[in-house]
Length: 624
Image (cartoon, rainbow, N blue to C red; front, side, top):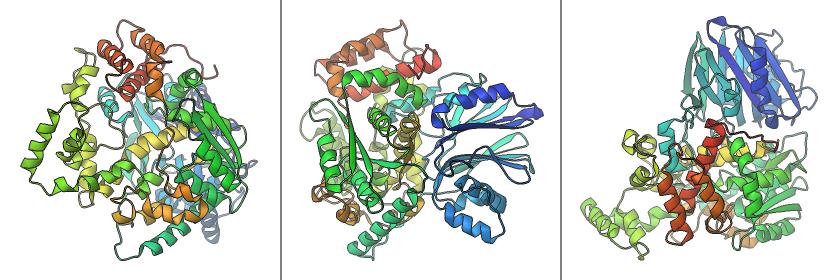
């Protein structure tokens, strides 16, 4: 895992080496082992290396023999040995054992079509001076980030936003639409960022700059193609084989490996498979509040699997003490409280290993979220005329809060497209006017969250509702939240995090599962995955419900954090974008137990702290 920077100046203006160095240095945490710069007139590439493969000869930027192609690459190519053999048959000679050189030779052989041959996680940039062309790409599911921006001087590309800001040429201006979307999703959906002038390269896309013009294009498309003729047992057997193969390939490294272990089926399965080939170090995190720690479950699973187990307990004080670092490393406001869990468990793991496995993606691919059972529970409403459904919805809205059935009738009255925007939905559209700092910002000035998901629903219109929900999550929640926090929080500690479930071959198989093999009326999720992994895990893990990294912010905002939260909201006469009076009332209502506003408050608080750090530029050093 590494960090990369690329600068492309208009009008052949030479790249400023000092600026490029500053941008590269800003990502030292992504690559503490080595660094390098390559400048070719108006184009410059910078790199920070975390050495994982070929520790002595894999330095970057890497150039070809003719020195007319230069590459900087962040990630891992898991089929690089297969590609190396194929390229060798075509006459390519190798001077290193790294996957970086395989990617370089692959580009020499296939050009921009190289992305279609890769099985891995990656963000890379290639400067091809033969055609005066800068080419960048991001992996199919967005495991590794790529950001880009245009300035009056040209274009810049980087693994992290803070590197682009370090150039001194990027405006620090909040994008109003992004903030509006953030209030719904708790993150900014790609390709936007919270910065008006900075964009994410979308997952499964490439970027090309030629003759001063930047274009992007898609090279990978998510498709569900369920097979209804195969038996459950047959598909479970194939699932096991496919996942074992993925885990085996993800083991490629010349450094120590370990795995996160939460006690749930995803991480337990990974560790169980890893134990076939090597003793595994496992790492777990818990939160110091009753009912918010999985440490006992993880410890029990670790004992069953026979791992070298390590754990860390986080309390309200230690969480709050690390929050500035978490926000700084995240680049954008991401109001997922569990990001801190990955931050702390990565900190623990980095003391023992350099590579760690984690279970991200299993829920999106195999149907693991409890919300995916909703279409089954609401099937009765699908058989009703729309007029009757609308009437039931209107009646439900007048029912007092807390009345049993209110939420059920409200959800059932609305079609899927109107109720599901992905796994997180913080503020309803009608609530945003209360949050916004009026009259400076008006909710009516912005498009609604449904405008983000409507094009996705259109592409998924022939899928059943569960597959539609998976499709939405893969394009929003997985990219913008799950993989984002995994990358940023692990890289904060120079730790490479690998996600064997998020693999094109794994998805190719998972996409063929019929819905009945994913969720059931009985409340089961990931039905087929649980069966496929049963031999690797304790029997009780097979039926254990998903917990993730539950964080007690609901409790802490009432108690230990109340004074701190109030101080943050009162810190300045005018909090940009945020209606301070409404936020303070929300905090008071939460403390008094009138409502659980913890997620809404956290979304507001994270934005305010991020704004102070990145926009107002309050003094902060990540080393503090």
